[in-house]
Image 1 (cartoon, rainbow, N blue to C red):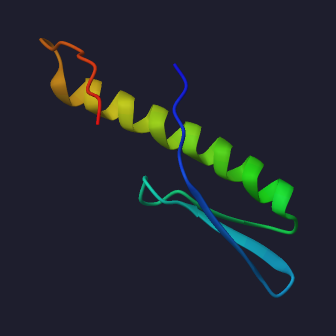
Image 2 (image 1 turned 60 degrees about the horizontal axis):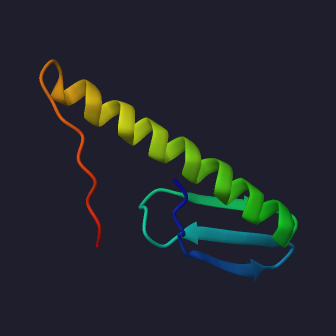
Length: 70
């Protein structure tokens, strides 16, 4: 399943900095815009997987997974 998120990016001096708008805590800094987007993608994937595992662990042993659309 693929989702789309919004990267907020800007150049600050010699660095590119960025955030994922929809997920607090996902932010990165890189030397190029391309490196920044790749770092944001990797960091977002890691944050989503961590949050997923944390939610499943908190709900153990009896839980269900249900899709929610907004």
